[in-house]
Length: 479
Image 1 (cartoon, rainbow, N blue to C red):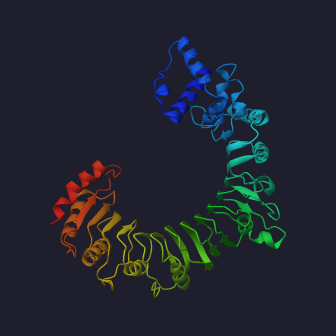
Image 2: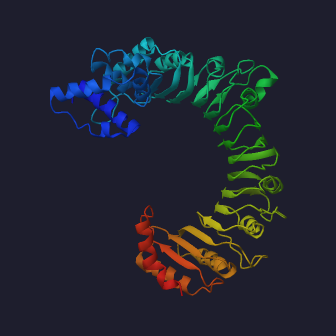
Image 3: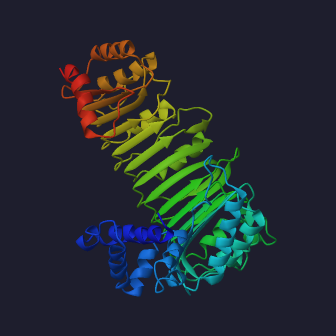
């Protein structure tokens, strides 16, 4: 296919997706020069603003390719309010970046950044890979950072972390979305100004120590200058000993740390609706979350601190506990009552914690266990009328602990309507039959409980497979 045909059909594909009209769906692939001219004429009849908007859904490489369509299209790409440099340079048949391809990509980047004329960009994306020369990448980042833009995505996927002056990125009045990866900022004092920012994502961003006390807490410095921020993602960032998040506008928060040391965590977000917290906690100062709907916790802390932390989640509706590690005993004492909790998902977490949450959640209806926990007790819960209606167990095998887990729930849950068990994929037919036979012998507190056995090699992505699984495994166990 010629470059002209490629550009035209890339444009038509986007037009089809964008419009969904019969006018575009009726466009069959042209076979003659007359058909090509007619189709191109239709595209040329569109208003320029609409063409610019639609070209924004293409990568910059494809948008530039439309310059070969006709004289009218030669300079269209110069005013497209989107720059997207996320396509890799071409590779040879072995998937290796050839030197000539890299040189061509570098020349392409230089010319586009030099010639592009749109005064304000709606969106700018750039990903730097290790096949590119670091000096060129550094220069491109600096040129891109100077553009006026509403949505900015800069990700350095090479081996070296690139340092940028903070004022080029963190002092943009029009910026609404900012997502950065593997960059370095030094001193943040008196440079952060993001009055329109609503979404901020920092992935493996390094912060320098700075010279003033204000930059000892770079995250607080940034948030203090983002008055309407609604979504914040901090993923494996370094350069600070404490994580301080204080914002009355924030609705979605994700804090992830993979360091082998605990941090001081401060969270004061009264309007937060969704939280993902994966971090070791040395000290914590966390306010209540009256608006919180769902949370995922992957926490390493002391038992006392864990109890204090859970007190703040007593209004939550959906809770995921994954890999909870407590220093000291697992008997955590008295936990709050979770009046609104309806869905609980657990994995690699101590059983005493799970049992207490079950006992303290009067309206909990669904429990999902992603991985087995190997400390199931032989005792019954204090509240014998657990409110669970649906239980789903993943990665189940024939080990004794797994049977003990199922026995516990079948014996102590009178309202249970469905128990779905996903067997491990390496179990053979004989082992599966032994598991089913063991399950059949367990007495049930609920007479309406339906058990579904899902083999490890079955595809659970469709309803059809689910129904086949139920026919083969559950019908024999209903009675």
